[in-house]
Structure formats: C-alpha cells, structure tokens
Length: 283
Ligand code: MN
Image 1 (cartoon, helix red, strand yellow):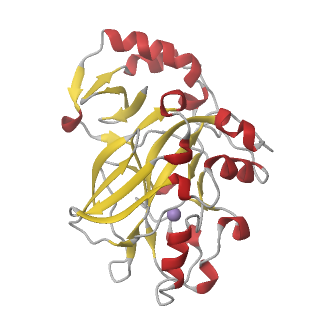
Image 2: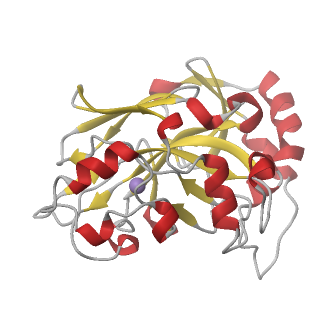
C-alpha cells in the first residue's frame, strides 16, 4: 500500500494516479497526554491502522495526484539519520574535486559512522526546497529513504528489514563547505521526503532498486541500491548499535554519484523504482 499526507496532513492512500482520503482513520489512534512520545504515533500503530485504512478506502473520495499537495509522509519522526559516502562512485567523484569536498569529509560510513539531520529540516515534495546561502553551492542528493516501523536496539542484520515500516524518496540537500555535515544538511527545507510511503510488504527487498534524479530534464544521478557500500540491512544494524531506532525514524541511505548544484527556479525530477517519479521545485 502507498500512504501519504496531503493538503495539510490529510491521510491518503495512493492508487494509480488518484489519492483516496482516509483521514477518518486517524480518529482510531490512542489518546495521548504529555509527555508525548518521541516516536511517530501513526507509524507506531501502522499495523493496526492498515486494515482500517483499507476499509476506509472503499468509500473514500478521490483526487488526482496532480491536484494535491503532498506533505512529508511521516509527521513526527524522532530523528533523521544520514549516511555519508555510501556509494563508491560518489566517493571517487568527491575525491576528484577537493575544492568542493574537503578530504576529511570523503570517508565512508563504515569509518566515520552516521550523522543526524534536524527534524525541522523536513518538508514535503510539493513544497520543495528553498535555497539558503545563495552565494554558496547547494547540491541535490537523491537517496532511498527508510522509515523505521518497529523499535529496536542492537538489531541483527538478518532481522533488520523486520524493523522497516516502508520506503520513500528522500533528497538530502546539502550546502557544500567546511562545516559539520549535521549543520550543512539541517537547513530548513533541506530534507525533502515523499511523496508517499510504500509499505515494506509491498516494496519488498531494498537490495537492488534503481534511483535517479534529473535537473530541468537533464540527467544528473542514476544508480542502483546494489551499489551501496553499506546495505540497508547493514545501516539499520550499524545505527542500532549506537541508538534505539523508533517508529517513524528516517534513515537516508546515501547518495550515488552525479551530485551537483541547484538554483531557484530549477525542477528536480526524482525517481525510485517501486515508489514512483515526482517533480520537486527549487525555490
Ligand atoms: Mn546524503
């Protein structure tokens, strides 16, 4: 199933080129009081919500995809995890351009671990990203993005995919420069997610899916997740050795080669196999 938020966090099911409004299902969530959980409540309850979503879809009104605005597919993620250099060809292009990529930054995830992006940097695909620091280079990074579904610590690789709620497309937008990644990648709107989440059962094995990005119709990035240096399973296991993964946590798996700058007015067309294709504006 493909689920989304649209038009101001209405809950939707995407089928073909239509979005079905199943917002009433959210009434089934358990009541909460402070202190509120650190995880995302919808994702935490997804297994019990999915049958209700399927039932509500039967009588739901539909709107064409082209006529809705997509919000991020996770409302309240506790954390956004990022993988530094995780494709060999991206490492090689970075090493070949020391003026843009400081040597100390071009080290693989297995060596330097993961970084965190501020959750306040998240926007939906329809809003798109807004360039800050226009005098500096801001790059696109298309990434297969995992939404954690089940809490866990010290997760074994062979169990890792059991902890996934679903998959979405992510843009890990980045200001190039000497500062820490967590600063340069946490600018408001520099984490673009969506347009919808494909549930793990529908998506299947993430080990070999195609992903690509075009800017104004010209190809920039195209690769497959089979080229990941640390696999999706490996990333989940690695991350969970350091911190508990919670429902709704966002794991961006790293970007392939072909990164490059964008400027206001550009359109990024992003595509990931089994998820879809979407045009994302640069504002
Ligand atoms: Mn990245």
